Image 1 (spheres, rainbow, N blue to C red):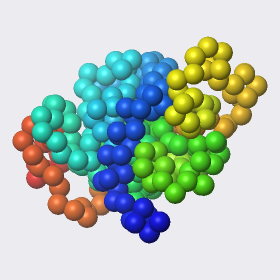
Image 2 (image 1 turned 60 degrees about the horizontal axis):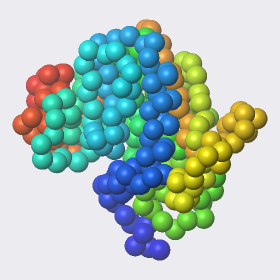
Image 3 (image 1 turned 45 degrees about the vertical axis):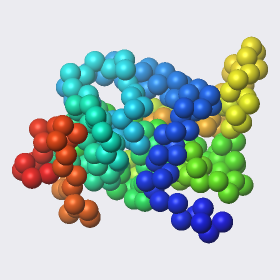
Image 4 (image 1 turned 90 degrees about the vertical axis):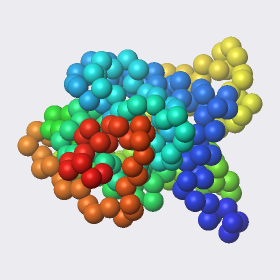
Length: 256
């Protein structure tokens, strides 16, 4: 038990990314993509930033932004252009520079979840939009996390209350526009392969309850909200040729 509780966040990130290759993980990701596409399709802007656990899990394919940037916490060979290697709570972008920020479980898998939201608020321009995806503790998945000793896959995350996320966003000068709770399938591997009516999930009445496996929050940064100063780096910033082209183009002083 002690050994499991000491798993590093880097190991949790990699385990969660690998979990998305399972049938249940693929089903969850497909549902999240559908939810996000519905939210971002009417949005307009120039720069979109996805902050998550891997650049290999692209979201918001339906958005019409000229430049799409993603972050990843770990360096790997052959990173594509537009991918920045950084922690989700230390973004190497100037303030007020993004039109849309997507947080894909970034706060769930960070030792500093509030700072993740602060950094998103800092880099987002006034009037820009934030989409936040997080695991819902008030769900069958939340119950599974409480009773499970595993810290791999999604069970290594924090499962923060959606109301708490909305409170933090309000303190950071956001207006919450919409919130959805989705994916009512139980966290069972064998359920992901069930076909027919059983796979369609619960009826309409059940779907109205905020008990889905994850929540998706859409918020708008208030115009005139102060551009927050980036805190001092806790770690040396990563600078690798090709991998952080996006960082270099949008750095404040060229040293990050």
